[in-house]
Every structure is written in C-alpha cells, then in structure tokens.
Length: 320
Image (cartoon, rainbow, N blue to C red; front, side, top):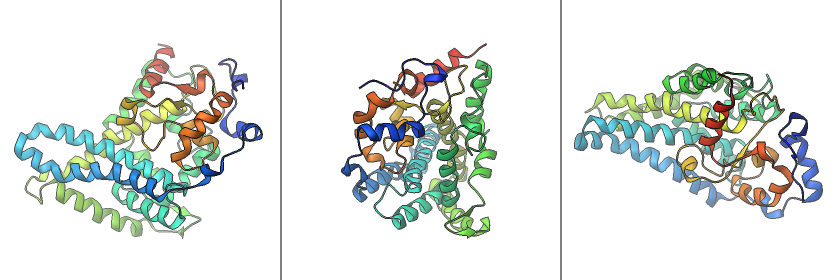
C-alpha cells in the first residue's frame, strides 16, 4: 500500500472527507469497530471527572497544610481536567461514548453543567465543525483558520492570549443560547439554572465551605485561562496547516505521547485524522483504525509525533 501523500504540496493533499470512500473500497470497516462500550464510556468519564472533583475537594486542605502557593498546582489541575471534560462531551455529542443516545446525552448534559456550556449547543457546533472544517462556516474557524500567512509574533499572540482570558468571549458566544434540532428554541436562562447550581457547589467545596473564600475563584480562573489555552493549543496542533498552504479540511494525527496525553488529549483524541475520517466510530477503536489505515491515509503533513513539537515547529516556519 502507498500513502495518500507523495509530497507536502497543496495539490497532493487529500482530506478525510475525500479519502473516506477510497479507503473503504480497499479495506472495509471491521464489524467490531461499530460496537460501543458502556464500560469504556464510564472508564473515560471517571478517569477525567475523578481527578477534577478530587482537586476541588482537596484545594482548601492543601492551602491549610502547605500554604497559599498550593493554589498554583490546584489551578493547573482544575484547568487541565476541566478542559478534558470536553473530551467526554465530544464523544457524547457523536453518540459514541456510550451505547445509547439517551445515556450519551445525559452524561454530556452533566458535563456541560460542570464546564458552563449548553451541551446541545456544543453538539450542534461540533457537528458544524466536522461539516465545514476550516471554512468560514466552521464555528471554530477563529481557532485555527486563516493562519497560513500569520507571522511568528501573531501566532504566539494567538496562543498566549488564551492564557490570559482572551478566549472567554468566543467561548461564551459559541456554547450558550442554543437553538437545536433536538430541543427546539430554548431560552438560555433555563439550561443555566443547573449550571449556576453546580458552579455554586464547586465554589462551596473549593472554598472549604466558606472558610477560604478566595478559593471559590480557583475554578473560574483556571477555566478562563488554563482550560481555554490548552483547548486552543491542541486545536492549533491538529488543524493549522503547514506554513503558506491553505489545505482544505486539514487535520493532523499525532503519535501517542505521554506528555501530550497528560495535558492535551484523552480518549484517543490524538488520532484526530482518523476521527474526522470516521466521526461516528467510538474513540476506543481509533487506535485500531490508525493501525489498519495509516499507510493509506497518512503522509508527512498529516502525522506528527508530538503536539508540542508540532506547534513549536509551525511557529518556527512562520515569517518573522
């Protein structure tokens, strides 16, 4: 088998959408890839939400035992695992984390309450991302689109401003006030009631039931900075094209990497090209899909070894 790419030029690029039919004609999907697992779904859910809730509960005790500086690792942990809750929502939005749509939606809704997002709006936005990837109609265009000619300075600023709260406006406008096929027109205030309640409970536990009021702010602060920065950084690694190329429907997969997994992905999200190739397939099967189809679909521009290195190298490629 030969790869889909023989060079890195725009003419040789073939997007996941254009490749899907070609690869299936050569290697059909395996039946086991169509199976979804509740066991896997709960494993991923608990693996992410467990450390998140544990950090919330431990925050005031760490402050009392070790002092105010413990707020730094607490913010980092809450930001990282708060961000990773989006991977649960992501798989639920594809109805693929659990076996039934009802369970996917219920878990997705609760996760939305935790991160302050309307799950059904998230679901619609993500569906549009797959359909219109990197076009102006992509709701996530501002995260990765139109950066082919950006200078190093502009790329660095694009990433770093998320770390100082620069993504808050886009996040609020993107995942709030939904009108979806599933639930019809909805006033944002109704879905926000449980969000406010859940955020109040988190603040209550984080502050030691009011003993350390300043800690009530650690989760909102971590969400507005660390979480949104990590999300933008990962999206940059996955979807920003090589310098000077405007490649349609561009997606990049990354080899498994423990450093990347610690901060930037979970639920096999590193196999992002494969996910765009078969978005309805449960993430537990993406590694197997990669192993079977890699030689057919990947070339130099679609396969990276580290998200951190991808971003660093892309910034180096940019003009000064």
